[in-house]
Length: 331
Ligand SMILES: [Zn+2]
Image (cartoon, rainbow, N blue to C red; front, side, top):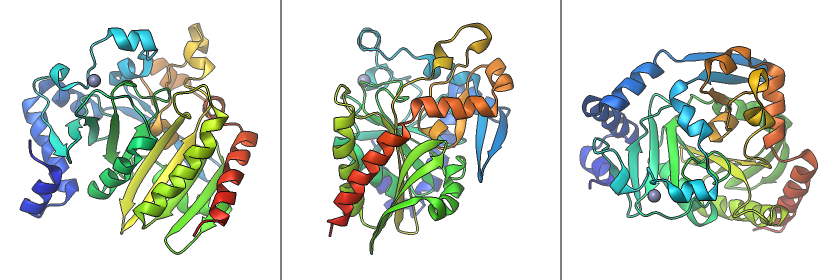
């Protein structure tokens, strides 16, 4: 198996180019992926304007399976794991990332370049033990945003460790941050690292900018340590995370959550909206697999859906004040 880092070293190409070429090659040899990337070109998008930022909505019927996936323990235990190497489609090639991961073209794309970075072994989806890989991947895959969906926060394989990645610029959050910084609560500003708490973005978010991998991981550790006791019944605190790397600096967004799916998901008839929010939705692109939902969804629905799945303001304030106290005594 070829290593991404070796291809980059041997060809002098950027990761962006290597991975774009990898995708093009897969589209030549894998009809299902070719058809799905082709239909992505015709996918419908619309956008809603909020106070200083936008939320986009994508109608994407190929995501139906992922959106409605039953991820309870029994269903997961009974199904064949689609990320295990022996069950993957024979047409799906891979590029290795270090010893534990394979970079795969996601055959049900949201992005023009959409990858799943899957563990070689069937181990549970968990954030803290593997978050170093999130930062490592983002730094290696410059040009892409790498993301993590928690086992109850959008991961359709909660029992098989994986990340995903898509090209920068697709999710509105990429350009929202600069403006959000001006009106957010600063939690820390140091030589290498800055941390903000964002309260007024429909979802709650902790954003970290750092040029130090160790400092980034330490801040994430503080967040996790204070968040875990808030949801002691969960296998891990409910969250999504986005990470990108530009000009020697990581940008990490952490989205603490309180629910897997909104009430609209379980409603019937005209009340139903099939949405299962994950990192991409939190990044500002709602993925709707049904045309009727795409057509009827309103600004108010978006506010309500994000509110239902996001940590409450009081809890978020408590969590971020804890982190701020840690950061006051840090370094
Ligand atoms: Zn598996």
